[in-house]
Amino acid sequence: MMFKAFLIKYGEIGIKGKNRHLFEDALVHQIKYALKPVEGEFLISKEQGRIYIEALGDYDYDEVIESLQCVFGIVGICPVVLKEEEGFEQLAKDVMEYLDRRYPEKNKTFKVNTRRAKKSYPMTSMEVSAALGGRILEAFPEMKVDVHQPELMIHVEIRKKINIYSEMIPGPGGMPVGTNGKGMLLLSGGIDSPVAGYMIAKRGVKIDAVYFHAPPYTSERAKQKVVDLAKIVAKYSGPIYLKVVNFTDIQMYIYEKCPHEELTIIMRRYMMRIAEHFARETNSLGLITGESIGQVASQTMQSLAATNEVCQLPVYRPLIGFDKQEIIAVSEKIGTYETSILPYEDCCTIFVAKHPVTKPNLKIIRRSETHLEEKIGEMVKTAIETAETIVVDALS
Ligand code: ATP
Ligand code: MG
Image (cartoon, rainbow, N blue to C red; front, side, top):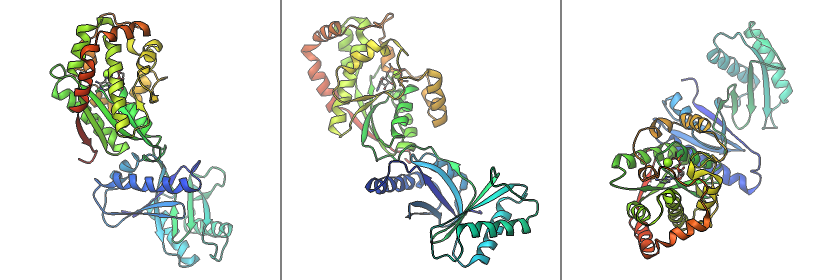
């Protein structure tokens, strides 16, 4: 194993002053979480606006990279060689050894880029770069300098230790989870809502979730599918508190009392109301859904207005302008697609009308809901009280 350490690059825009510490601490926290299941022991340290991960023994390189690529806030992962500062001769030797081991073919154009954080170092950055460039050409005559578009940018940073690196493996970008409050995701077993959760978590938002389950119309396997999806999202977002609400009675009652073509809309309104209750109870600052304009009858502009009307908290719909194909592409990338397409029934599909309203009229919907007055309050209360909480952790 050539590399024992990684230098983590993160976006720095907008994280000046006090925010910077919050950002870095959250990032370190999420890195620790991501590395927990990886075999090996790692030391994570913050130093002069940098985050380092050092392996304290054997570890699986690919697994580390894969795990770090799930940590929002990371822009790049640089496998780095760290050396004590012991004068230029030793530095030149270390750089030669680095190149020899990392690029045995040595048929590349290169440029040396030196940064000197330690101003007491006796040479300037320019001098170090020039001297190292000369040494490399001497030692490896096949290599050529190209200052404009080098194939290899050899970074040498003189800090507390000397950093030598030449690669940056892309991270997922975004902001570390925990830096932007919390949101309540309405998570179904479909393709869209896990992607919506991923996208909001990517902006630094911690995620809780709620799933409306309708036994016996929806099976245990359908519920397990939602837990499995939450588990995949949790690889990126950290642990998710998933509320499983028994929605059967409410759904049956709506079916009994309201026009069938309005069933989906009215059901969605009750989902939003209950989700909002849990959001407030657990300090979430908004609801998150996987809706996209026009995708189905319940997602036309009129339908969205009807579902939106019942909540006071903001509703975040990160997929609003996405086509299905674009959503699928993200779900494949993040690894939820295969689980999402498993064919278990969804509570929304069971009682769907042949011709659901596509342009619900708010006055009519409100009037239909008055038919529920007798029992709905009690039913919502029971649904809330009997909800099960599952802590979903990617690691368990
Ligand atoms: P998805 O792929 O996310 O299931 P969908 O295209 O099937 O989306 P709908 O069934 O209309 O869309 O649901 C729209 C949104 O409502 C979902 O993205 C999700 O956020 C929420 N939702 C729908 N059904 C449920 C459910 N059973 N539990 C929790 N949330 C749900
Ligand atoms: Mg669905």
